[in-house]
Image (tube, rainbow, N blue to C red; front, side, top):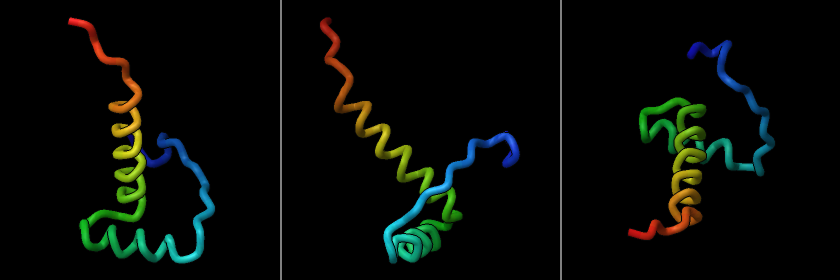
Amino acid sequence: MTVQQADKFVIRMPEGMRDRISENAKANRRTMNAEIVHYIDRALETKTATTEPARAE
């Protein structure tokens, strides 16, 4: 997928959050975009794991 094909979303952040994300991204050797996508992906994985019903075996 190219950048032109990717979905884009504008977000407003509380004061200081952009700086914190930037620092974390540098520490993790990622772009800010990749860092934010990582956070969202982790949150969705956690939510999916806690909301999926248990399978009967």
